[in-house]
Amino acid sequence: MSSIFSHLHQSLRRPDHWLYGSWLDTVVRYRRMRLGIAWLLIPTAVYIWGIGGFLASMQTGMDKARYFAHVGIGFAVFRFMATVMVDASNVFQGYQSYILDGQLRLTDYLLRNLARSFHYLLISMPVVAVVVVSSPDFTPAGLPLSLAGVAVLLLNMFLLSTLLAFVGAKYPDLHEVMGSVMMAAFLVTPVVWYGQAQSGTPQGALIEANPFHHLLHLIRAPVLGEAIATSTYVYLGAMTAFGFVAVTLVYPRMARRVPAWL
Image (cartoon, rainbow, N blue to C red):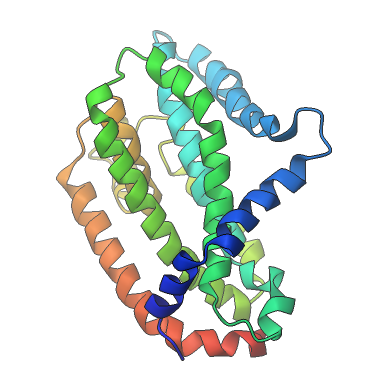
């Protein structure tokens, strides 16, 4: 069985299936609606000014401009991670007919899942940009580091979704489990609250063990003028290395079994 590098190389050379196909998935879903894909802007706007505004009003002295930027980036990035993780748990089932027909370049389907969620993230960016630029903490010099964080996020989401896809192919119940897991992860990830306030507490230790916190922090902190702790770099370096090794070992062994599991 070919390694993941061989399949990934072929998929990247022929992006017509996963890149164009993922965009069609997005467009077709909203084509009959009056606002079209503009509907993808609405959840982000509602979360920032609706839920974010409600929570800010409950905290005396809260600087809403700062808080909206914090929530905007947090919600957009976390929604991307949650969508990738949940959809990855049954991604192979969604392309069962193609896989059973002998198409075993599974990286096409993994990349399609990742690209589809990334389109949602990109489309929500105009709303997020409004609140970020309006924040007094906005630091334009942090944009390059934040974009590097997006690259780290994409790599880790691909690695994690690959492992989840194989487990989900064998155990379909994983899809339901992941929905609950990501709901719980939202509560322990500083999306609508500040992680610094929990430093030195048991809750703070839980945050430090949360991979979604570190991935989000790497993207949000630079553009909001926050320092990135050394522990975040160490954590993400170790997580990326582990995911890389795990996928390298798992892919050639499990890819050939996927048709039988489906």
